[in-house]
Image 1 (cartoon, rainbow, N blue to C red):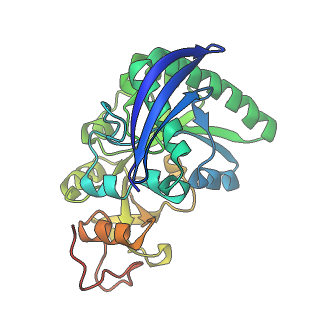
Image 2: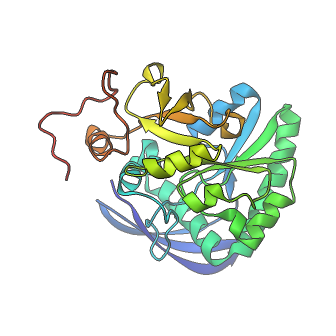
Image 3: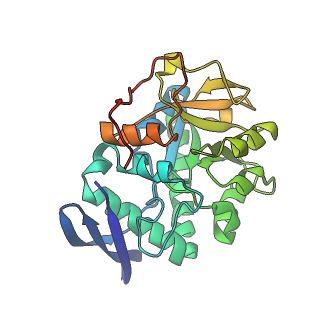
Amino acid sequence: MTFRMQVTFTGYVDQFPALDVIVTDDKGSALVPVVVRRILAADNPKLEKSAKQHWLTMGVSLSPANSVEGINACSSASAGCIGGCIDHQGMGSWLRSIHVWRAAKLWLAKHKPALFYKMLADDLDRAESKARRAGMELTARLNVFSDLMHERNKHGRQVIADRPALQFYDYTAHLKRILRDDRPANYHLTYSRKEGRDTQARTVLNAGKNVAVVFNHANSDFPKSYLDHEVYSGDDTDLRFTDPAPRVIGLRLKYSSFDEAYKMIANGFAVTLPNIKPLVELPTFYVSS
């Protein structure tokens, strides 16, 4: 199901920003008023995997690509990336409220960045206390579904720079961004390979950095190498800053329907290699729309 949102700021409730979100999907449209009281959360299954390594992983979940009117949160995304985005998988494939909250927070990030990053900083302070009580290390992924360049915003950069002992990380499809070395040292990036961009991926690998690649193969069937570099499984945890480099970080294809999987395989977003059993077999009759 496709979700599109329009967001309007309406004021404050108990000093927290209030917004009206019109969400439109295959079933129609609805206006949902929300009050955003936090930016950071730990409600993503992959982020939760990191707890096994004694890391408390918190994430900022914002609407991706062009799903919010007037905002492009993933300006380097490809068609395959947008079509197979994990934003609309799991409960995100049908539950409107998830997209309402993500849209509201994205609007704040773009239109009220000082407020957005102040709220993020307050959330991080609380999360650091929670991690200490649990005897865990805290890490924060600032783009669970989006690809905003937080380090290029003065407020965002300050939040990161003010916490040199806290590890931030993200995936990014921005080639220039991954190759720049002027971001804070505690903000780790992994390049996200898209269909038709293997040349850019090789550039990143040759620069000594990691590239995430979606494979249409089970983790146990990942190739030993791809793009002339060793493949390292990235599905056990989301702790990308602990990965050796330069490596191809293999990620298993995730999908909410077979049609979605077929599209990602057919357009090359998900890599299917010969002589290795595919996770999803592309039907011979399938024609990409």
